[in-house]
Image 1 (tube, protein in one colour):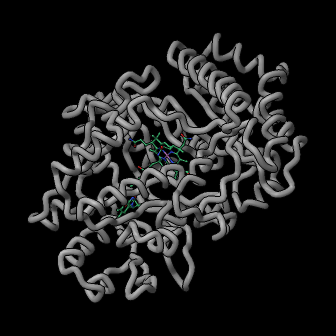
Image 2: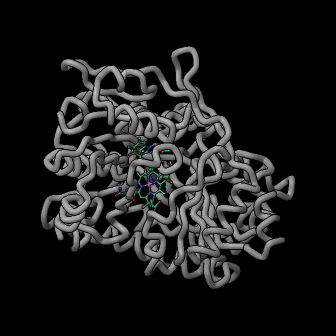
Image 3: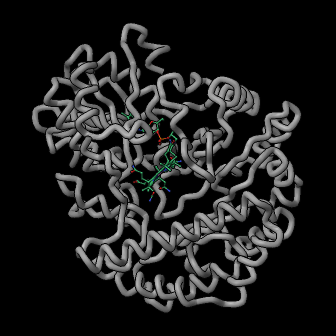
Length: 465
Ligand code: B12
């Protein structure tokens, strides 16, 4: 968007992790490039890194803009650190273009005219009116892939070599309490954010995939959509076009169980699998329908059961992963054991248990959780840790012991079926994910016992380099 609308700006992207760029090299890059504006966006877990980057950018004389699904929900707090000049809320493409012009003018008046931002004026935080959503996603320019280190994505990965992250839709039609994604891309009407979902066209997606394949040699598509199968026809139409063009590529996506069951009936799911869909993630979340209602998720456990049954029976080559949330108010070790039992019964190849995380923007967030250093958010990593101090510890021990010792016939039969019917990719992926999870749990446990630190994100060796 900046290249299209602000041709007199030089735009560069530094995606540090795939380049293995640690802090010293990042500082060298910034000193060499001398940016007028540094724009950053991140998950909560990387808040400390972003604030460190903001400090560095500020020291080099740059203006700092923060956006994305975390900063947009803690704008007053972030602005009060004095490290960030502007926070962008929600969808960013039109905002960053207008912001570029306003930052060049360098006046509070110019900023006040940009919708969808917060900034400070005479010590007060000003939030401008919400920005209307981009109605037609095909209006977006193609992502600036040429500015990204494309060959580094999935490099060295056995499960997703040649990975490309693509987006077919934005937003979600549901409004689950724990999720920020429908809020981030939601529609603001009558003083409220409402769920809203938008799609690119099949033709546009086909064009993107052709470029990924032809120009960047990409071999696996990771769909970043919150709900890839929200549309009843689009994914299947795209898949059929891919087959026609001899472009079927491996694909992973987050799907919803209710839509999956619908698509199995219409035949759309079979088309999606023919087009390359070989990895499916389903959020089951809770052990029963009351639990789902309590978090305002509108699908049901019988539908999740049916979805996994369809996948296991009709598409045994597709790797399936189910995610569950634990740690809601009232959860006990018995709840966790019920969740684990259900997970084994549902015939998924792999299970992920995600601790309820009080993300800013969700009703679980409280302002007193804010921390000016960002360090507290390192714990917002969506990872269980049996050595984490606090009230969830008994739940996490229950989880760990169930994972280690709870070998029910249903669990054993799922593993056997992967071995018998899964095909070589699924066998390899299941094995690697299971070994990694076991290693992560063992490593976290050992580290917790030896150093007192809970398990969490692991810092790479090049972190400071
Ligand atoms: C792909 C992805 C990853 C990939 C990224 C690799 C890659 N090369 O793409 C990988 C696998 C590495 C990853 C890892 C993790 N991820 Co992740 N990831 C995603 C995912 C699925 C897509 C992100 C994306 O591309 N979205 C599409 C773009 C267009 O949307 P967007 O990012 O929201 O950006 C728009 C606006 O928000 C805004 N915007 C964003 N940034 C900025 C910045 C500025 C300056 C401006 C103006 C605007 C702006 O403008 C953009 C265009 O409109 C999201 C979920 C989602 N659908 O967004 C989760 C998500 C971001 N991840 C999440 C998490 C928790 C993690 C992990 C902690 C998980 C883990 N335990 O490993 C790690 C943390 C990694 C780290 N930072 O250290 C959470 C974050 C929640 C939160 N509020 O903190 C999300 C939201 C998923 C969820 N279910 O909640 N992730």
